[in-house]
Length: 193
Image (cartoon, rainbow, N blue to C red; front, side, top):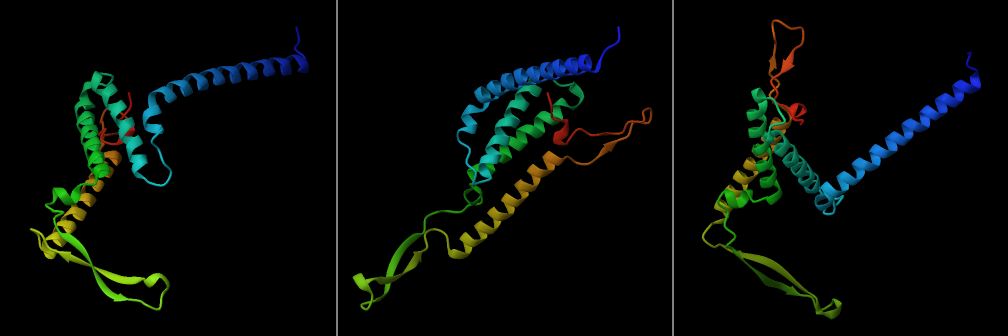
C-alpha cells in the first residue's frame, strides 16, 4: 500500500503531538518534584544579591554530595569528590556568614560618639552639623586596619579556593592504551550522580 502525502502528514502530526504530550508530562512531573525539593531555598531568593546564588549553589551541592556519598559513584574518585564538595560547602558557608574580620582578630569594642561642630541658625528647624568621634577599645586603629587587611586576604584566598574546586586542577590523565584522554576528576563537571 502506497502512503499518500496526507497519510504521511497525519502520521507526523500524531507523532508530533505524542512527543509534545510526553514532553509535557515529564516537564510537569519534574516541575512538581523541583518545587517540592527546592521550595525552602527558592522562597528565600532575591534578585539583588549574589549571596542568594551562593545559597542555591550550596543547597544543590549538598544534595549532590549526599547522593555521591551514598555510593552512587565509582570508588576511584569518590573520596576526592566528597572531600572537595565538603570543603566547597564549608567555604561557601564562610562566605555567606562573612565573618572574616572576626576570624582575623577584629574586636568590635570601639565606641562611637557624635560631636557637635556647628549649629546652623540660618537653616530652617535649627539643623546642626556633627562629626563622628571614635574611641579605641582594646585595639588601636592600626591593629583594626591590619585585621581588616588580613580578613580581605583571607576572603580572597577562600574565594579563589572555591573557584579552583569548581574548575579543577586542569591535570589530564593520559591513558596509553586508549585514545581517550581524561581529566583527573577534580572539576565540577565530574560531579554527577
